[in-house]
Amino acid sequence: DTAVSQTPKYLVTQMGNDKSIKCEQNLGHDTMYWYKQDSKKFLKIMFSYNNKELIINETVPNRFSPKSPDKAHLNLHINSLELGDSAVYFCASSQLPGLSPGNTIYFGEGSWLTVV
Amino acid sequence: GQQVMQIPQYQHVQEGEDFTTYCNSSTTLSNIQWYKQRPGGHPVFLIQLVKSGEVKKQKRLTFQFGEAKKNSSLHITATQTTDVGTYFCAGPAAGNKLTFGGGTRVLVKP
Image 1 (cartoon, each protein chain N blue to C red):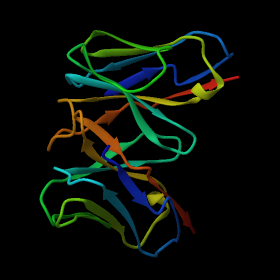
Image 2 (tube, chains in turn brown, blue; image 1 turned 60 degrees about the vertical axis):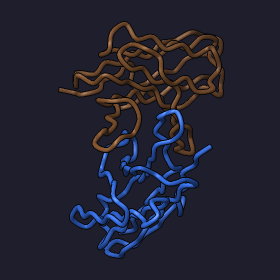
Image 3 (spheres, rainbow over the protein chains, first blue to last red; image 1 turned 135 degrees about the vertical axis):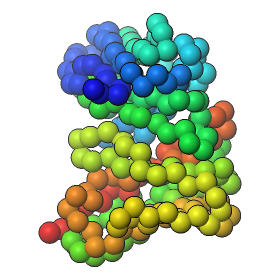
């Protein structure tokens, strides 16, 4: 009964390819996120959706395009992959947007993307 | 913009010893959260602190929120190999974003 599940877990692909990572949460949360974790373990937010509406869009290349077909799903599509895109991508969800008291973030298990 | 800094970046601890990791913000925080990420795993929520000077304990872990609500600490007593991982603090930033510190990577020597 995984709360936040994302697929694939591992992805090795060549430069220039287009790939997607899918995410689903069964917690009934309104807000979903994509985070990127680099090799130095820094966790940086990329996007956030609340009830299918984009509310946070950090400075990421427009090769990255999120899509939320419903509030339980948030997918990440990446065009023209580059070597620097290699990282772990975490999907996450929370009941509410932001970090208010009582609002905690649940992370998926991560998708390890390697671009060669 | 608001930044959350953590020190140290790495902590090598002998099993059985105590250590503390610190989290500092450039601005006052309404609350702060701590997460733990095991090697190869994903961040998992540990605790949230809301009140000035608040102290909370979870077994061997003691979390503290500073009086000015600009810093926090995590103290682990009698470190065990199960404590290995990266500990992140996170605070709210402008635009209602959750900003994570850089993490403290804890390695335990048996």
